[in-house]
Image 1: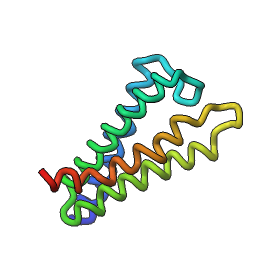
Image 2: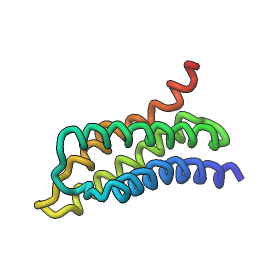
Image 3: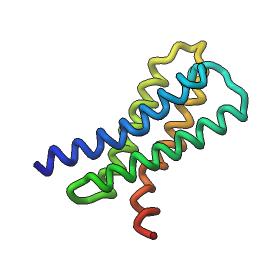
Image 4: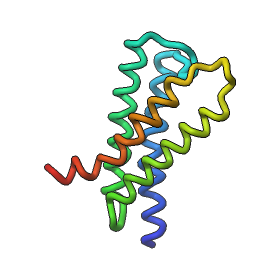
Length: 119
């Protein structure tokens, strides 16, 4: 049962991040793999960081134990997805969204339990 909750915690944390990103780009009718304005990139990056943080926080709440580990696993899954997308992207694609996920959003998920613990 603990293993199931651990897996569910990490998956749920990642799904919160991924679905929010998918919905954002769909609602905005924007391609995350196309060049965008600096304002657009900054705004969507902050949005992604917030939802990555929320995903890490949810993982800490659902996890049966070791909440920090579960948030770190969400971070690793986000980073792995961004890395895989970088390698799979055609050379002509813009990679700003993958780099933002790798360098800013993934760490946001990892710090969630530490920020929440301070409150």
